[in-house]
Image 1: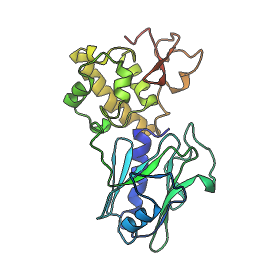
Image 2: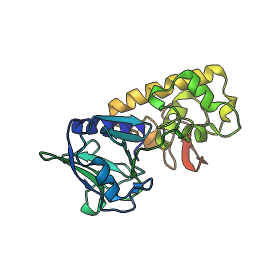
Image 3: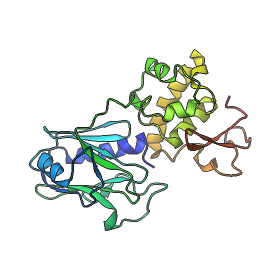
Length: 259
């Protein structure tokens, strides 16, 4: 599913439409626009506008146009395509083919060219002038003091805290399992119980993991990924992996070296 790495790949792809002028908005799915706007409202706000920037915060891709910013959210199975090119050919739990009925939103540009979202399960959305104040700091640029603040207080599990987009924006299930495994921290550990050296280690690991897995190609390229299954063993020490549900998500971790 799209996590921060996939969203950043979409953001880089969307940079290809910067400087282009919107001539039409496609919104065939009336449930995809959110925030009280419909297809007509999207067209009124965007047609005639020139895209001036493509940005990202957490898992949200933002297109600026001199008018209301357009937010693109991808849910579990949304993919962004520009001029027929996909930043990601398929998502691990999404479709491995294209179907016209999966196109939920699109922008058509002057002189040809098109940007659109392909989303089989229709869990993403588009929104004008999004309020992002409920999101925490972006995981890729997360400062140590921001991570300390995100973990402080309460006895909830570490994984649930890192998955909370209001605490840290961008991390999803696969990345949090990978980061916790690399950091030697149990996903069940109370978030507020980490010592300062453990918080520092976690902070370094988040940045290094994102940098490395971005080069590899996405959130499914972690060292733990292929072992996240019944009977899977830890690629670090060979111990059987444990499966738990944390923060409502299936979690795989090694009780031998994660504590």
